[in-house]
Image 1 (cartoon, one colour):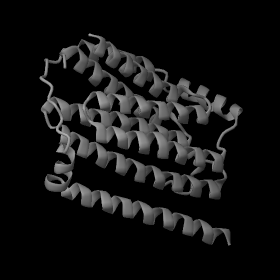
Image 2 (cartoon, rainbow over the protein chains, first blue to last red):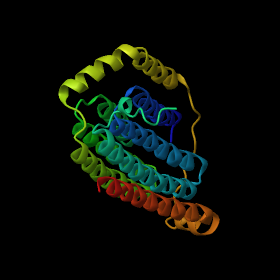
Image 3 (cartoon, each protein chain N blue to C red):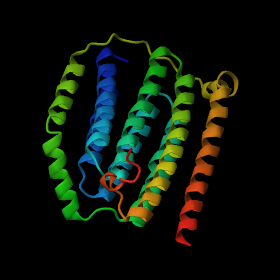
Length: 103
Length: 165
């Protein structure tokens, strides 16, 4: 794998992670926030596999990526459960309407 | 040479799909873009000799996650178009500097020259060996997270049902 290709991989991974973080920052919709989180985890998955490949530990990279995917799905399911619960209370899925948990 | 071009095309499409997921005004389109991002990650994982992680990514992230998102959107029907337009304008006004910053970051990262790294062939049973012998704590952690998630969902919906009465 050439240095230029590795640079491209790293650039794509960082750009997608920053895009996801940007989305988390700017959005007020809870569902869109979860989409931002998903983008971050996707780039991290790719980063783990790339790191495993570059260090010659493909198995370890895959094991960690599989662990990350499992954790990602559980986080997503619980987040969607919370969103549905918030929707039952406020009839909206907007962070600006969740005043009752503000400190 | 051709392999490198295919890989570069996949990486560019990966970034473009992620941007589409962020920029799409309709939530359904954002979810479709997210599923497409997952498919591209799967293809890239296959290129990096990680078939097991790729299959996990495709079945769980492109399939199950999209289905969960579609269910959530159908159950909540969160925004109408006027609300989306207003919040998009507000977002652009507040965070106008972030997209140029992202572009600058991309250009700066492309200037960083990384050394050539010899690639290694993946052994077919490598990941299984790692999971069952050296990383069994990870497996225990995964089981705990899954159980915690299942209990979390049960508790959340139980509360919701109680409140409905």
